[in-house]
Amino acid sequence: MIIYYEQVHEEGYSIDTSFSFAEGDDKFDITSFSGRVDKAGDAYVVTGKLNLHFSCPCDRCLEPVKMDINEDLVLTLSPLGEYPPMNSDGEDGLSDEEAGMYVTPKDSFDIHELLREEALLLVPEKRLCRQDCKGICQGCGAALNYEKCTCKKVTDERWAALDKLK
Image (tube, rainbow, N blue to C red; front, side):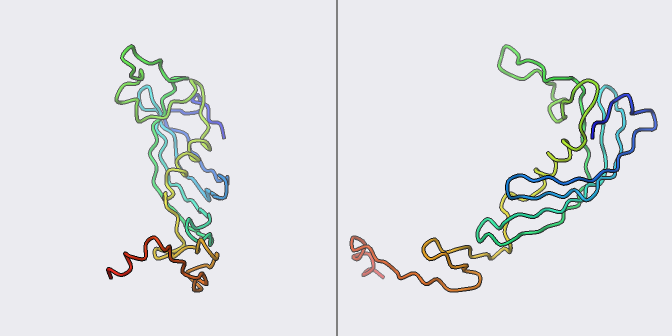
């Protein structure tokens, strides 16, 4: 959903949207975003409430993981059009204030793309069906949360002397 900066007046611009997207096996459903865009000097500020439903396979056992995330967002947009070129000392041309901003085209921004990026950052890095998930046995493929491993313990003869130390 493209929003043109010329649509943002003194009283701001209201946004109400919802959409879904997928990244590999991860499913994101932004059930709602209600917010507004306001001008703040040379920048623009998007504020609002993001409601996200997220589902993916567990990182250990591949069982479905579902979670709801509700987050208040404050995003600062800088309509520079493009990132400034690097300085001679190898630093980017952004000021400290601009470094925390989203750099957008000069005339518009895609609110869905910004919310997509925020949704990706909000989900946990390690996604588990439960905290004590035992995963899947690498040998027999047993789901260790529900069944016992049927693998036979194989002992390497070279390590037999260490077993005697117990």
